[in-house]
Amino acid sequence: MDRRTFFKTMLTTSLTAPWFLAAKKSSTAVELYLISDTPEEILPRLLPGLNQLGFFQGKNFAFSQAHPRQEALTLTLKAQGWRLSSPEKAELRVGFGLLHAAARPSFTLIQDGRIRDLRSASLYSVWKQMQSLPPVRVLTTLTANSRFPSPEPGQTVAVRVRGQVIERLPLARNIRRTIDTGSGRISFFVENGHVRVADSTCRHQVCVASAAISSAGERIICAPNQFIVEVEGRRWVDTIIG
Picture 1 (tube, rainbow, N blue to C red):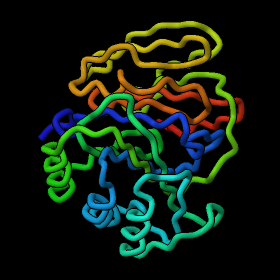
Picture 2 (tube, rainbow, N blue to C red):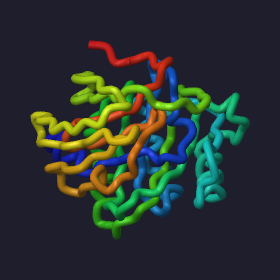
Picture 3 (tube, one colour):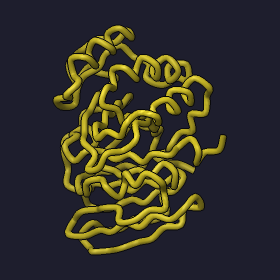
């Protein structure tokens, strides 16, 4: 099983997710992007495997904003040993967004701005079974080891390939780029202070259908192409090293 086979879906943050508007992130921030209309049914199968890998270990969780499956998710997380708390005390934040086009159910893990390869038998089997389900638009995000920041307007755009920042662009200029990532090609443009993916060689085209981003901390991710485009603010501290 190669990396491209495992990561066949591309995910994007929602414009309404305030916890993504980060001016500064923890050096150990971990983010799970889950496409599913019933995330409460998937998480009990994901969390034990992720916990064994050292992810999402904590006691308290909070919702970044209202989630359509909030009640069911609360029960699921409590059953996994988590406690609902205030945002200030939460080690885990649960967010919600809608994709602009339906995509196959899937999940991707981001650690310190890098797409993690989760090739373990148990987690891969969950991903494989999710692929047989009908396409959906519901995106649930779980973030660990990060704080609720204050929203901040974007200033620059960081382009990352395989975890490395290859270019920074001013958000105030209109620019179009096509990037060869080694796994494929992806084109994006900066226009009127917003960033959007225009074209990609990947299969599911979720990044192409995703909403434009403009606020600090918002990002669009193409897992098959190992590509991340992220908006940065004036106080941004880059945590990608090496």
